[in-house]
Image (cartoon, rainbow, N blue to C red; front, side, top):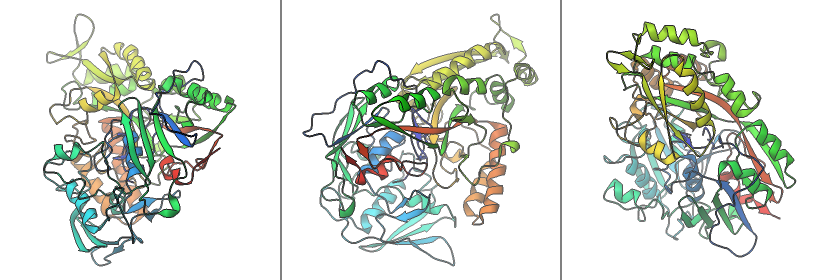
Length: 562
């Protein structure tokens, strides 16, 4: 499964996650909302199944886009990851390993652009039909189609890493990349589609199959209902007979963020990912029937500025807004401990070898006086009758889209409402659900992205390459992860340089320069890096290896229940 970038409604994620975070985004998901152990609202029930061998995950945010080349948030990615397998996977050490491929691909040593994969014997889809090299080619050629409007344009097509896919025989497929790059392997982790099941004559026809998936993974879709449940059962035709799940069913149940721990305590769900807050750590540790898993996440939360708007097109304005937002107080108020979260500065995970170091970056420490001075210098030195700043007849009115499934966007925007008023900014907070925010920002076409600011989480992949993500100007498109509209040619040059450099130390220097530019220009500001925590019922065995490179979908084949 690929989780390069993924936006997440309730976490970073890991996450544009819309991405939210495979991605782009893949990667991990995590809850950035609040949870408490008091007064639970019952989890939404899936259709009844016999027996007690059912694993239940409490969450929210899935949209029904159960297609590995179309899903753009971490919750749909979880489902896609269980239904589809890719040529490669990532192990717990952050290393690429074969999945549908019989072994790691061979690489043409002269050009370093041609990868040849040989498939395992006996691969089948869930409908019993064989999986061949034709299906592999079909999957990637679908991404390259002219009317493709999904989030994987960085993989194939005119702007994609893959230039050509060639079927050599039934089990062998060859990929020619546009450029040599150590990051090319990340393109081979997407789930493979059945050419027969996903035959289509338009993008709309392809998308219409999103909730009737035919995959090659451990599970098949039994049923789902929006904002209620997703139900998966083991795939009887799964190719890996040693990894067929022993559980009878896996259910994702809709549980509100503030009732997750209550649902855990009452046994309505078996595991969940509450927000990485001190109160939730203490709440999980106090549960008599569950235990805590925690680790540093590979992602961040962010706030995106629409730089195509006259109010936000100037770098000095965006910087002033950050200076006038007390993010350290926000982190303490929202998370309760700086052991669980740290101030965000650059769009590279702190778990990555490419992170430049805090001393190289501007933390934009809270400074109202500095913010006022910067806005004056930027020409926003006139005031309307209510004190709102103006420039050339334009008022500094900003609309911030806040989704309600989690608490942190509301907390952050409320703090901004109060402090930005002190610098003459009229902030309007527009409350809506996560899917509406995504549809208004990333999913909308350029010129139709109707927002000034929005916040989400973004989960990242093993490689720090940000191509196709929030900060890639070429991803400013319908369904692309970049909604800011900001473009800087030096940044784009550095993206390409980082992709083609094989020396890791040199790559680190390239990404350091790139990160400093993003930190200075702030088209999208990184709010925080955080830990992720999970609550797991003691009756569940096999999930304790959840970690930065291993989400729970990698482990369900070995899960047993008391």
